[in-house]
Image (tube, rainbow, N blue to C red; front, side, top):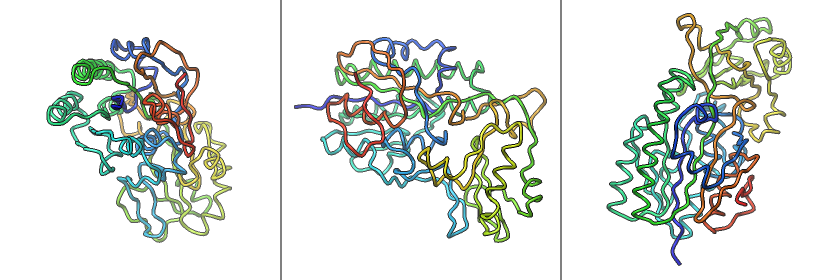
Amino acid sequence: MSNTPLLFITIDSLGPEVLEKTETPFLDSVAEMGSSVVDMRSCFPTLTTPMMSTILTGVYPEKHGISSNMVFDKEEKKIKGMLRDLKSPPITDFLYKNNYNILSIQHFMLEHRKGVKHVQVNGNKSEEIRKVLEKEMEEKRYDAIFCLYQSLDSIGHRYGPIHPKTIEELEKTDRELQLIYDYLKKKLGEFVIVITSDHSMTLANNPIDLRISEVARALDLKVEIGKVEQHVSYDTDILMLRFPTVPIYAVSEKAKEKIGLLADILKKFKVIDRVYTKEEMKSMHNPEYADLSFCFKKGYSTGLKSREPSSFFGYHGTHHEEPSIFMFKGINDAKKTIEKGSLVDITPTTLDLLNIGTFEHFDGKSLKK
């Protein structure tokens, strides 16, 4: 019995706000002919690498082991990026066991996975993905194809989530997806299509000048703002990384003793929306993210300080803000609306659509009705 073919698309930073304001006939047709989730939630934190890992494994960061885009290695006292060592198997491992021929284009967490032909392209040029797909399909018949589009994320960060340039890029991506769909229809016949996003994007137009260093000095703590591949100074007490949900590491013993007091002080700032303790991050299935973290209220960012007055940009919506996107169409599926879902549901749902079944180790469940 032959495999049911699969086209698995992830569009980095695609959220419902920009989708509603953009003409996307192809994406609309998938939602109208198949199933779509009304309230599709990202997980904690809304960063690309851990969320791509969650999409592909069906488990939370506490299980797949990718807690952030970059992490602080306490033993080496160094900040590390390019995290790829999944501790849970991605969906492609299950497809490989079921004799699928698998092609990954730009879906970076699938590089070096068993049975996967991975091709890296310029993620900011959506047409490059189609060209590579057609080239690879002419050389070999792949029946599971994974594509990651990152251009919407790049443009959104620069201009904002609903800027005309962002909308134009999503419309271009939609046209590219239609061309790929038409091409694969001729090559493969009927196939399952899955459309996902890792998180949304929100607008930052309110600059703030919150100086954590002043707070730390009041507690007799030295703060360092870290960068990837940077070694942290031995006299640093508090290490912070620049993310929408800001991680704070207690490096010194003195900082560990005062981390609770620091949390209490941060909660008093009006521009800070939420402060997450270690226990709260554990309840959101990512205890290794940091020792303490916080996020600003929607629209506020320190990233505007160096920009022109009235400027703005886009940043990832934090855990409790905008939802992500999940729509899918199985073979001969009819239109269905699903009220709620999470990124951990994507892999179980996809396997169910392919009649491979689900597995107990997933944190999510199949949303196929």
